[in-house]
Structure formats: structure tokens, C-alpha cells
Image (cartoon, helix red, strand yellow):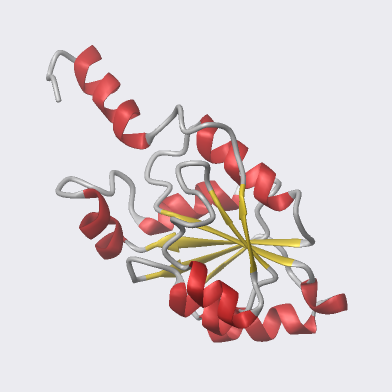
Length: 164
């Protein structure tokens, strides 16, 4: 199967993964807005990829990113954010989705592992019950939450003299 592909259809992605040798297993699902890619994102995705055979990144579309992050976001549209993610060696597939959580993606894709960043604990992952119901393990990965797109944008604005 062709790696480093952008998907907008979770059913099509699921079928494609099933055609991979071994079903692409284990499949690891990571998710987020990835509005401005920073080192914390890279460390999270590399750690997620180290858990399995295929890394799928579920990327919030522009509308869901705006509802999660607020006015003025995303800074980059989903097409550009997905292109940047696909340029990372550790990312096999990017799936653009339009919800606040990846519950629907987990139900349709049925990954083996759902990887979340260290800003979560096993008990605070919003999709933990959905993952548990399908037998998907939740893993907390990456470095401590010392980086954020919001902080990066704030630093850029301050450097430009525009404040926050």
C-alpha cells in the first residue's frame, strides 16, 4: 500500500489498512490540530510511531480546530497542515476529520493503540471509553507538555511588538 497518504474517508483508510500485509498491524492512532508544528508535536508523533507498525494521524479539520482553539485558528489550513505531517518520516497516513474528539474515528478505524500526549493521563483521555470498548489500548507518549502552538504564536506576536 502507498504510504504517506492523505485521507478524508475513514472507511476507505480502514479498507486500505486491511489490505496491507498483516493488516498494517499494529495500527497506532494519534490525533490533534497540529496548527503550527513544533518540537513537542514531533516528539509525540515519533513516540506514537514507535509503538506500532502503522501511524495514522487524525487531523482536526479547519472548523473543528477553530471550535477547539478559538478565533484566528487554524493559522494554516488543513491541507497544508496535513502536507507538513506527511513530510515526517514517522507518519504513514493523515486522516482529516471534523469532530471535537476522535471517538468516531476510533470506532471506524479500530486501531490497536490510541496515543495521546502527556497533557493527558489515562483517566483524562476524552476517548478512553470508546477505545476500551473496542479493545484499543490507550498510551500516553511524548515529552512533557512544555511546548504549544499557542505559546509559539504568543512569542511571535510579542517579538513583532503586537502583544497577545
